[in-house]
Length: 161
Image (tube, rainbow, N blue to C red; front, side):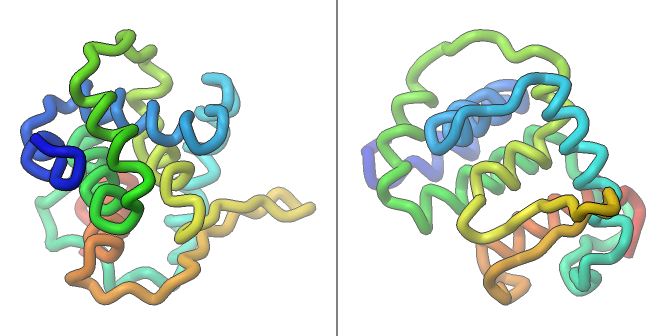
C-alpha cells in the first residue's frame, strides 16, 4: 500500500474496520457528534431518503442491500479517489488498530458517509422538523459518488428498486 493508492487496502478492510476508518476520517474533518446525535441524524437521514430526495436512479437492484461495512468501503474509496488530502489520514487509519467502535457508530455508517462527504452531500433539518438530503453535484451513476449514493440508498431502503 502506498500513500497514493489505498484502494486495495480499503477493499480488504473488514466491515468493522471499514466503519472505524470512515469514522476517523469524518472525525478528522469535523468532530463527530455524540452517539445520541448520531442516532438522531441516522433517523433524519432515513426520513430524508424515504421522502425520495430525487435520487431514485441511484438505487440498487432488488436483493442487493448494503451493510455498514460495504457502505463505509464505498465512501472511503470515493474519498481516496477525489480527496488526495485525505489519503494520508485514510492510510494511517488503515495501518492502525484504532479503538473498537461503539454500536451506535456502527449503526450510523450512513451518517458517517454523509459527514465524510460533507462537500458533496448535505443532510439538513428545517424549522418544521422536516429532513432533507441534497447532493451538491449531479454524479453519473457509474461515478464513485454515484456508487456511494446507490449503496447509501440500498442500506437505508432495503429491497427498493
